[in-house]
Image 1 (cartoon, rainbow, N blue to C red):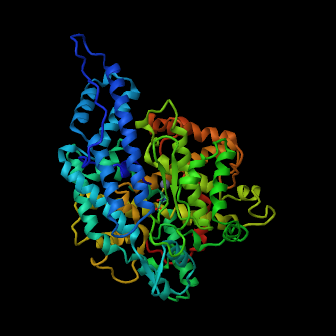
Image 2: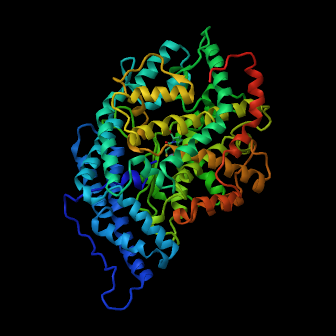
Image 3: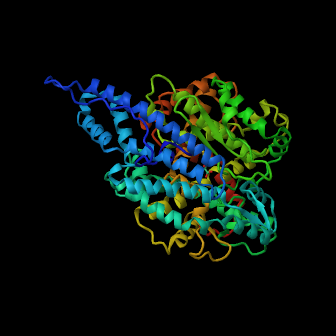
Length: 607
Ligand code: X8Z
Ligand code: ZN
């Protein structure tokens, strides 16, 4: 997701903008300073400036991500300037000094003030003006990388194709040879991004090092209150807990796909080009569940319907209608064929002004993947709208942590796929008999399969890249080493260092060192779902219907409302009675274990 951290880079303004003068933080008179009052005055001033600069940066970034013309320097220049102004403010030595001074009097401040000061200092580390030239170079490099990433012209069989086209081909194509061509086409972009990514690694590391973080990965993990080691320990443990089930799914998929593609010799490791997703992070389209296939009905309803339907679902829980500006200003659908510009091809949600201007950038097509993604993005949007309230200061308008922000909409996406929900809405025939085990298998191929990718491959690679200074001639080798170890996937042919396959994942470029957010979001969302199903709806977690439940809406809105002003661990404990744990996710898929073990009897396990 593009969030403050991603959008708001740093540096010295090239154009002078009027900036309100900071009020003093030390009282002029001899009387002992009253720190809470000083903090209040200062934070008011800081927040006002922050919101103004953030909005300008978001507007410029929006333009840069929705209107990409390779070689067009006007957008890039405007975005760099807006981000530099933002950086110059958040990372200014004066602000850092004052924030540190306030923090020295932590004991005298309110808890809410302390959180704001800490957040401002965290933001400062992304753009300290003591290394203004580094920050400025990073902003420029980030803008250029975005342009390369989303301006790329993918080609298949001699024709330009979109990433939506490639994804659809990977879901449908049955010939292994053609699948390999499609997969290779999707990796063509990698080398284009290599110099920029290597440059960004150094610039990102150097930026945060100026404020004492050893590396950029550590910096991002600190947003959870965790050290790098603690974060890696956590994600490795989650991966271990899901591993037995993954092993069954992996074995199942090797035999099943070999059968589907008419390959006699079942491979020990899955060729990456066999999987219905560019990175093998989601295999759910491998399985069709009779009676539950949404694609035909979605195709009839059209792309717009999916966004409206997702909104209706949130509204049914008691959330408000989206502001009219959401529909007027968002960029929700693919560009018309023949457009002379491109847009960011990855879905995101934007809180433009940290107030009511909320937008989403998507390329929605009427199919199951986008059906889930629209629910995901609206989760961000409703999170934004819910914590935009007088109780939550501008600086704390964020998720309880980044994973909660990712969890809300994915939870709604999961709920919107369950049979009672679909039947209630008339999207499937309520009388139709469906195979529950197949339905659970399909779900596992979406969410269980995701864990080794997110908590394993992505997190380990970025940890190596940023913190362990992975050498430039081992980038691709490390990627495929991790892919084999965690996902049991191998490339269809040797992929040397002339390629850069990790860079084909957009997050590696523009959402750096944060991908464990998604792994954690799945863990959290299963905890929330378990609680909702059992304690609120009194329904089987495998067969729920959230639609119309104001109680479910209240439960979710209560988590969203405080934003980042409440500690994320406290929120989880208060709302579910549990600490962060894979228990709910493992339990949800437990029935599948026996089924798959039976199916896989006599088959060779390779992981
Ligand atoms: O990137 C996303 C969201 C961003 S708001 C669409 N997701 C991850 C991905 O696509 O890799 C959602 C789940 C995983
Ligand atoms: Zn997201």
